[in-house]
Length: 167
Image (tube, rainbow, N blue to C red; front, side):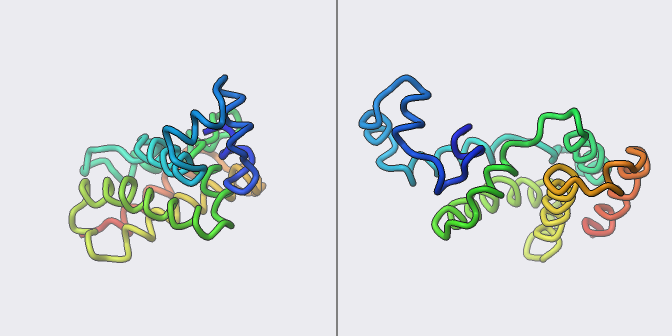
């Protein structure tokens, strides 16, 4: 995952990935079929991990807001699935694989928790807010978000998510 996260789909090579894993490129290709297959497996594993979505519908908006603020803090581990997405999305095939992973895991998990979002654009809008906030706070380093009180950020995001997820 590290090679794709650091270099994106186009910048990661199977030989380099294999070497870092202590195996041959032939072995990687044998198990995954191709670089695309390996990337799909990495996306599958990274998107299946719950990073900011919880499972309690009653506290979902607040839980997402708190986790997002906590996981985007300057000293936090910066959510590898987002970096993987950001650095790989310029490749059209990688973008298709990413979109499928997001729809299969993240969006599907969200609508399982909040079934009233199924068939609406609000689930996608919720994910867009999460991705946008993460991008602005961790990659762009927006000074207003960096300097804001975390309790205020959490409260504001919770209000936004509450509106987006309202039945």
